Length: 242
Length: 370
Image (cartoon, rainbow over all chains, first blue to last red; front, top):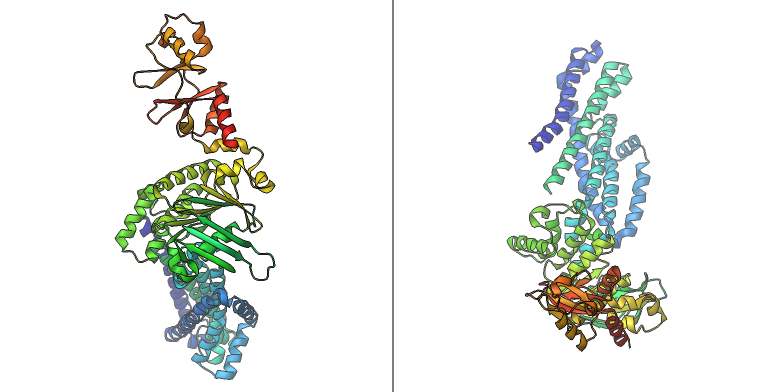
């Protein structure tokens, strides 16, 4: 029973975020406030922007996780600790470049479009995942690792059965950070023609229509919260089943 | 059996060796305790046995085989390894922790589960209660027990223990030590045990290796260490009260004198007086028909009494008693507590086994000491 109750409790915010987004969409489409905003704020158009936004975030985050996790594991190996230090510092410097600059730079090389946006978002979310994977594995207490080695566990078994499970919460925190930041950064992708909720915000600013601006902000904020909560649920699920 | 031959370890970028030309042998079924101040190389020595550290020079043999020629994974799986409680895997249950080595060895699952339960019972933890708990749910002492159970999981012939009882309070530590010693009586593992606590070394060791600055200063039995320390360093380590500490090494049951005055409770004072003429026992021990002591009568009191009185009417309650498993230290402590010059030793069935008098204790220690 207790189990069921916690499951209901964790699904409740999901419904709340989705319900909130739908309610906001309905409100803005029904009350555009001006003829100009009404042309942009249609159900069809919002659905397209949502699909673009979610698509960019999901694809770029998955690619980032697929790259940064193995890389983080690699640089945490004792033999590559030096490389780890170098890479970690590079990554920290990289993080100081503003996200809009990353998008603009990618555009100069790759041109306009969805794929460029994916590349830029991928690059920008590598950093938190890589850093947290490395930090998570490094933080495994030396005594625990020593016991594992001393009992004759093979290195890859230690990684799978000891290091990764212990580092998991920290790695997940990195992924959550990356995804939430990603949802925000994806609003800038409209500048290179990749669409997304950023389209509403940028148009709203240009034509000075508060409804447009607000709808873009609210929808991407709700998407960010939804993603964070869903990943939190994944984390819980993995923790309890392991 | 573990044998070290001329083992030296120099860590990279260090000029002073951590272990210097060390040769020693740990016999089959023996507990060898490595003891010394921190930085003396005792842990380094132990870790070279399971190749967590590779020696710079020298050979190490485990059961006759040079460890340098063995696959380190296989070697380690056949050597139980206990470190302080910190070494339990915090994300795994107690059962999973204990199952680590059997799982690495690829045992079938049902055999692993069986073994986990056997081991939990062995270290005194109820499997039903503890199997699915996490290390964080256990007390320090329970975690140490799990650590020992985990090391024994695949029944290795050799155990390496690095301060295994270091992180618990003194009372729990004494319990764990006693339990381990009684386990060891049955298991007869070859154990290398590292501690910085000389009292623990004296209690646990069949042989003690005292180390200083990477060198073996003395490798001897606890008794020899206490009675004949090799130099001032060892003497200082074992402490100025080493004579007292030696009392820890002898069991009361092993030395209790049986040539003393014992009489049935139904006998008369007269008969007891005769008994006292043939030996100089300070008391007459009065026993019942099953040879269980009911009490004592002091020599002086007996001599004052009328010969026709029955012993059971004048007997004094027995206070100064010790178990046959008690050490002479405990026996002396009991004497001092009750202000008596003797202690009556009972066997496991509470039957009379003998007595130890103060004078006899002095004699014993004198002849052992020389």
